[in-house]
Structure formats: C-alpha cells, structure tokens
Length: 147
Image (cartoon, rainbow, N blue to C red; front, side, top):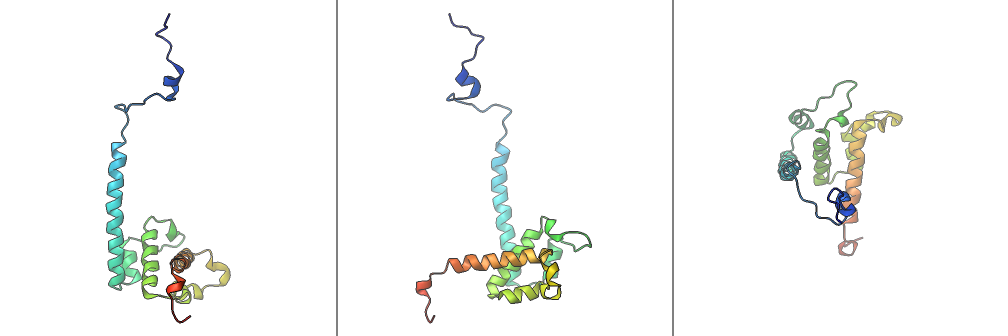
C-alpha cells in the first residue's frame, strides 16, 4: 500500500526532480542589476576616455570621483580608486609612456625605496606594468619590421 506521508527521496533532495520557482524566489532583481551594471560600467568607461582625450588633470579626476587624500586614509580602499587607476593607466597607454615616466608621474622617485611598495600609487604602477605586458603579448612579432 502507498504511504502518502512519505516523500520520495529524489524529490526531497531535488535529485532529478524538477524544481519550480516559488513566490519567494526573487532573482528578477539580479537580472535587472546586470543590465544596470552594464550601462553604469559603459558610462564610466566613456567618461574616463573623455577625460583622457581632454587631457584633464589628476586633481580634476580626483575631485570628480570624490577621492580625497586624507592622512591615515588608504586611497586604494575607496571604491572610486579603481576608476582613477584606469584613468591613469589608460592615459599612459594612450601616450605610450615609459615605465620610468609613470614611476616619476606617480612621485615614486621621491620616496625612499623601502617605502615605495607600501603606497597606493605603487599599486597603480604595478597595474600599468601588467597592462604593458598584456599589450606586448598581444603583438604579432611577425608583422613588426626593422627589428
């Protein structure tokens, strides 16, 4: 005889059984956020490209991103530090700046060498070096002439 009080094991654990959405599931919001996030990211990228084309100053970008250099505050912890980093790195890539020029632009040449790696700007410098490396790895050596 069939016992209606017992649920088959496969349904209980979801093994092979079809799982339906319930009223309590709200993944609609997650889908909407992806689209919103895409547009926000696109607009932020356009703004950064316009800043680079317009040759705006670091101070202007810092003020637009509401990044403030306060003593004891780590600039890299601010969520707006990444767009500032992107502005610096993409600008240097556009200008084909050397790593030495980037080092000096960040003021790392003015610091004692043992303190350099502890600064927020060193993080930006390392990101620039990695961006150059990525760009170099994408080059087609066979198409380069005069080497």
